[in-house]
Structure formats: structure tokens, C-alpha cells
Image 1 (spheres, rainbow, N blue to C red):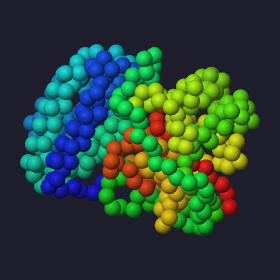
Image 2 (image 1 turned 90 degrees about the vertical axis):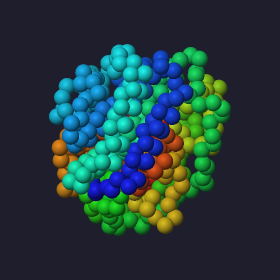
Image 3 (image 1 turned 180 degrees about the horizontal axis):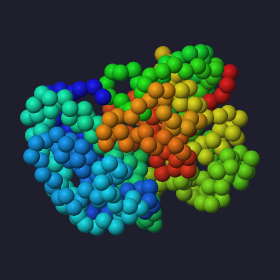
Image 4 (image 1 turned 45 degrees about the vertical axis):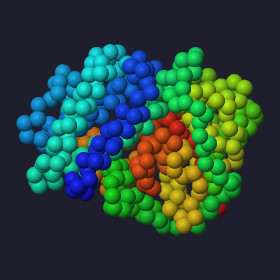
Length: 394
């Protein structure tokens, strides 16, 4: 991580932190305490955990004389950092009725005030050591802003009243023409090139060799996926990977997660008519791979995706619509080394059993997406804003 100057970091810090509260503002205290499944954390926990991150990794480590806001809370809001002490079990975050939402807001306010004092007043050596962690904390908070939306959408979807987080009809997603974007293949450089922020899993930049390929000019649409459903896609085991077919049978999947009867779907704006020409969302990797098999195509590798998105005339809908499943396992790049210290637990230890997604989604905060970003989830996960783009060999 490169060093940062504090000139505008305080304003950036305040803006990012305020956005989390803005996202949660339409929710009641009851909304913000619910955990409908182990993978979806309560809104209140997201607000507290991102605050714990700054207090623990920046203030406690680098601000002389800092005293914890409430030392009893550390195990409650530590996510997975073994080196930073014990943790409350992830599936039980919804049982944390205390501290209250008001107390979490007070915690955020106190830590924010301490962080702004620190950003403005740290000496040169302290600044060199700590400001990269401040930037990491902001990027981390932006990740949780997207998770806050995906998790609350899953929570509200369990309610028979189909409550909406946002008023009105959902804004239309950008459309694009069908077709293919071809790439000649050959040796290409992939990974972060060194300018600006990147997570450690995006490095080091390295060459890969690609055979000639093509990717879809746009994402697969609701209407196209409906044809897969109508053709018995969820009843034909030959289309599915073995674990995927087991998931279909175990969970009774018959359509994407939030599809409802009579051509409707559930989203952040509540229940609404499904738009056939818009990209299909909330697919698992298994569903994406089965659709690709049915369509006589395949999913791109993450390196094909990056190479195609870097073309002078790239495919449409690469960013801001849906994270796109690739056919790449989440593995370390050649010569990868995790960051030093506790933040070394951020990415590297999850590099097994997960699949890479590329791009960004309608819920990704502005400015958080980039060409080399490697998102990752287990192959059965489908509560994220995840879709697919087809690929084929040339």
C-alpha cells in the first residue's frame, strides 16, 4: 500500500462514513438487528464492525493514549481476525440486541471524532505508518456498504409484506446490444499496476497467456434466463456441475433467488415487474455455469474478463450493474504475499473453495470499482448482486 497525505483524507473519511449511515437511515431499529441467515449480517453489526476496524487497527495501534470506547465490545465486532482476539460466532450476530442501535451510533461518532483528530494531528512517522491503514479502512467500509444492501435486501425479502428499502420503481439498468467482443489472445499483463489503491489479492501484476476468445457484449438478461427456466433448466441434471445439482435438489431452486410469480421480482424497491431486457441478478455460480452450458457457451476466466474489459472498445455493462461470475477459482497470484500484521488476514486465508467475480454492481459505492478488483464468494452464494457474461473459444 502506498503512503497517503492527510490533505483531503479527513473529508474523504467523513464522506465515506456518512454514506453508511445514509444507507441505513430508512431502516427501523428492528430492521437493523435481524440476521435471517448466517451469511447475512445485521445492519447494526456492519455499522459497528467498520467502526471497530478503525478503532482497533488505527487508533489503538497508532494514536498515543487512545482508550477503547468500550473494551467489552471488541469480541462482538471482530469479524475473523484471529490475531486480534476472540470473536462472537458469526451465525449469532442477530442475537446481539445489546449494545443498542443508539449506542452503536454513539460509538461511531466517538471513533469518528478521534479519527479526524488523528488524521489532522499525527506526526510524520506516525502518519507514514497509519495513513495506509486509514485508506484500507475506508475501502473496507465501502465493501461493507455493499454488503449492508445485499444483506438487508435478503432480510426484507423474508417478510410477506415485501417491504421496500427505497421508494418508487427501481431505476432502469443500462441496456446494451447483444453480440460478441473478440480478443486475439496471446500474452497479456493482469493484476494491479501500482497506481492508486488495490487490495493485496490484486497483486502482483504478472503475465498470462490466453487463447483467442470472445465474451458477450452484454450481460445475460432476465428474458434470456427465463427461456432457460422454461426449457426445464432446473430439471436437467446434465446441465449442472455435480455440486450444483446437489444444491438445486437440497434447496429446491427453480429460478433466481428473488424471482416471484407472475413475472415479478423482489429488490431494494420492493416487489416489482421483472424487466425482460435487464440483466439477470442474484445467481449462484452454479446457476451461471448451468445457463452457460445450456446456451452452448461457457463462463470467462477472470483473466479473459480483465483482458476484454481493458480493450479500447470493451464489452458493455462491465461495471455498475452486476458482479460477474468467472470460471476462476480464488487463488493467489504468482509470488503473492499478504500484507504484514493483522491485515494479512484480510484476503489470503480465504483463497480456497471460492470463485472469483469481476466488475461491480448497482450496489457498489461510487469510486470503489476498478479493472483488477477480485471479488469472491462460495459457488452456492446468490444473495449478492451477481449475474453472468458468456464466453466462448475462437
